[in-house]
Structures are given as C-alpha cells and as structure tokens.
Length: 303
Image 1 (spheres, rainbow, N blue to C red):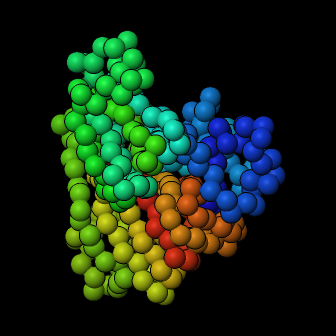
Image 2: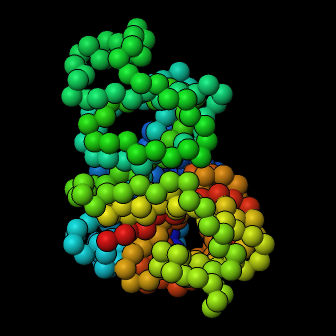
C-alpha cells in the first residue's frame, strides 16, 4: 500500500474552499483553525486527497483496505485509537474546553510574543459561570497562566479546563480509547542524532525499535522524543536533506508537517508537503523518502 495524503473534512466540505480535485495537487496548507487533521471518525474525520481513492473518507478507506493497515498493535482496539487536531490560532477568538475527557499531548507550533494558555480544574468549574467569564475576561482569575513558545510540549490531563488565545496554535494528540493510567509516562526534552542509525555499529539499545528503519540518505536529520506512553509515541524530526522511513507490521506512521517544505516519495506516490500536510504510511508499507528542509511530528502506536 502506498502512502496517503489526508486533509481535514472541515476544509474539504466548506463550499468556498478548493474543490477536491484541486486539493489533490495543491501545496497549500490544509489545516484550518481548530480542526481534525488525522481522524477516522466517519462524521468529521480525515479525507484522502491522493491516489486513485482521492475524495473518500479515511474511515471508508480503512473499511475498503482493512484495519490491518493500522498494524497489529491496533488489533486490541478494533479502531484507530487516537486523533490529531489543531487548536487555536483563529484571530479574535478564544478556544476552550470546559472539562477534557481524555489526556492529550500538546505541541506548541506557533506562539506570538507573550502568548499564553490558561489551565484549570474542570471539576471546580461551573459551566454557566465559566462561559460568562469568557465574555468579560474574568476567567483568568481562576486559572493558572503559562507563557508558551514554539516547540514546547506538555501533557494536558483529563478533567482539565483550558483556554487558548488567538496568539497560539497547538497540535493535539488525543486517545480515542481508554489509556491505562498506571502505564502512562512522560519523555520530554530527549534529543538524539540519527545521522548514522543505519550503521551496524550504532547502539540500537538506546533507540526505540521503530527508529531502526529510519536513516539519512544525505544532508542531516535530528530526532527528539516528545511523548511515549502505553498507546503511542510522538517523535519530532528536523530534516535538511533526504532521509528514508519505513513501517513494520506493528504500526502505521502518521507525519504532520509543522514547518518547511518536502517531497515525500515511495516510488508509487509523490506528495509535496509543507506546514499542515498530513501523510499516512500504512503498516508493512514500502520504505518512503523525505527530501527537503522541514520539521515534522511522527506518531506511531506503542502497544
């Protein structure tokens, strides 16, 4: 199976946006404010915008090709067990949640000087009062404020109330299944060069197994781990040149491009990627090459 380019259904469905035929070839960012970038939900999930199946929902694509495309780590869930969406960044608007039902990984992708997010405890927040406080700005009195900058990562627990102002843009990875609390762990600020990860003398004992198939072809690339838990691992890559990735039978990989430009090619499908592009690589798919100067998040299952 070839790699797929996905677009948010909210972008494809808007009548004043480009037609699906143009989305297939466009290099423009496809991410709109506060929208699902990677989801198999049949109501609001992603749409395939590459290959001969362009125009169908990602949910339908999975039904057509089989859930084995998600990998054996997904067998216990019977569905795509996570979603990725973008939050905030819409001028003049606050983005908020009164009481999150699932824990999430947040990645700050954009933050203007002085940008702030506000966090509080959902169980201590009364709904009507909170909504009124958003109107008059008094919500800040009962919440902790955190100044944020690009590339910061944070875990936001279930039960959190949050408010994101329009100076901040966030990528959010959220489980769609229950995540055992006792197995959850954080891995922040770990950096590891991967220039020689194809070298047989390289110490793979320090690597997660999924990175053994990643190698730099020319130029340079660096890898850092953002979050690892009992469900998924989210890693970050900075590429200046060309590198190769592959998947095994255990899990798919999904790439969300945060900056720069690249060409992603698996010899059957060639995708032009830039900020906002989402690429899905099915489990057990052929190696694919990423060439360009770009920064992207890669998520895979971690059962």
